Amino acid sequence: MENLIIEQTKSTPYIFFCAATGKLRIEGESYPENVIKFYTPVLEWLHDYFMTNVKDMVLEFKIIYFNSSTSKVFLTIFDLLEQKASTGCNITVKWICDKDNDVAIECGEEFQEEINKFLFTVEIC
Amino acid sequence: MTIRSLYMAEEMVLEKSENLLMSKQYCSVEEYRELYEEYKKLFKQVKTLVKIADLTEQELKILFEKFSEVSRIDSLTGLYNRRYFWETFSKVWEQSIEHNFVVSLLMIDIDYFKKYNDAYGHLQGDECLKAMAVEFQRSVRRPQDMVVRFGGEEFVVLLPQSGKEAAIHVAKRLFRNVNSLYSKYSPVQLKSQMTISVGIASLYPQQEDPITLLVDKADQELYRAKEAGRNCFRLYERP
Image (cartoon, rainbow over all chains, first blue to last red; front, side):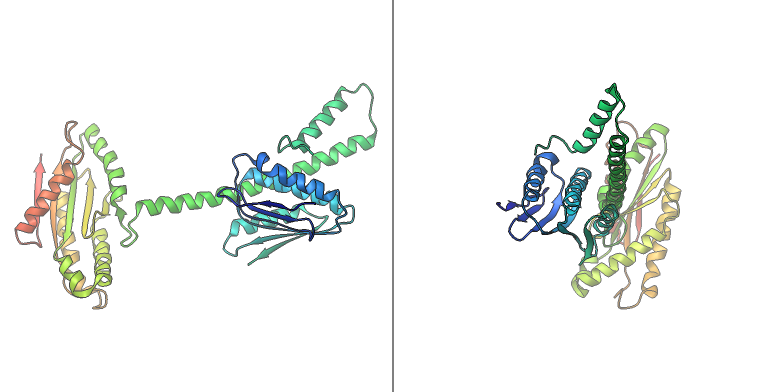
């Protein structure tokens, strides 16, 4: 399966999903004009990836700022991860934020409360 | 997988519910339970989304307030800046015309400030400006009076609904406070006794007056004060 690489722009994050290693990264700011248009390839890639024999997966979020529509997409992604985790896949999500970005830290903690089927850690650096 | 909208899961719950309602037969408890669990999960997500939206909105509000302050305040002296002066002055001017209020303005210039800067350096010049700004601010008492850093070493005091007597009173207080400066501050902060020249203008604005009239008149009086030897004030009054 091919990797997914989307370059960062002013309003959209850098996306790097590596099928071989199971290491996925979303980094930067997310407030695209058309959230569906931007994240459809991401969700479709994840859907296809989960059809393969995935045993382990680490998804890192290093998001500085994101709008409400993006937070809905993130919850949709977490839903997909929960469904996959229920089949025995070992999934870890790392929510990485700067120690000075209080909003990102608190958002990470809110997401963490939603999740109970896979490991969701908030890492402050 | 076709993604049509952000709310596909919600739309599916609605569709299933509609189908159940339209169904002429009762469905199993499991089907109702499945729908209920799906709805419960989505409702929990909505609560998370609202909390996250609140966090970012709160941050935006804080940033907006900081930005508002930065756009109004001169960072060196903490006084209002020229941009904010004109924003506020236009409202004071209009109100004065509408209600026939008198308004006064003092234009202050620090005497020989360039020489001070040249003698002691720009950092010392900044300390001098900061010390002066404190004294200028102390010279006004009412909340509607405004002290502004107008230029490099030029300052303005705006006195809405105040005539000649009040303006002179404030000018005298300015001179007293500036005169006491040198003894108040350490030699580190202030290297020599400073003086100011002040131009005062006081008038009842009329509809036909240009909005710059009061500032122009005060500026002319400031020039007269400088010509008269500095460390004094001159006044223009149009009754």
